[in-house]
Amino acid sequence: MLGIGRGVAGDDAVGPSVLALLAGQGVAADLRLVRPDPGDLLAAFEGRGRAILVDACQSGAAAGTLYQ
View 1 (cartoon, one colour):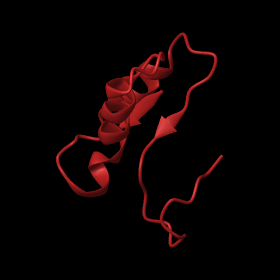
View 2: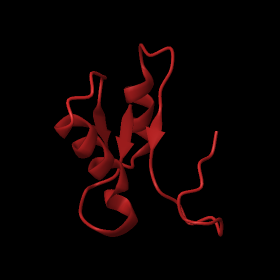
View 3: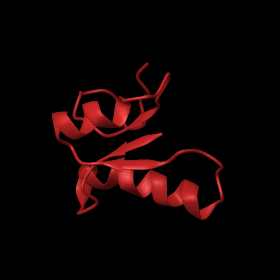
């Protein structure tokens, strides 16, 4: 699971916040924090068959809308 963000505040903290919550609950998964930089994101995908991205965006949809 890739949490995208810087953890500072606002929507940029969603990815890091979700990873921290999961880690605190002992979720057995490969949790990785990724800065919102294209190069870092591409590197995080290396060697992975699948990935779940956790990030926030402004889309006009209702809060909590999931995209696949």
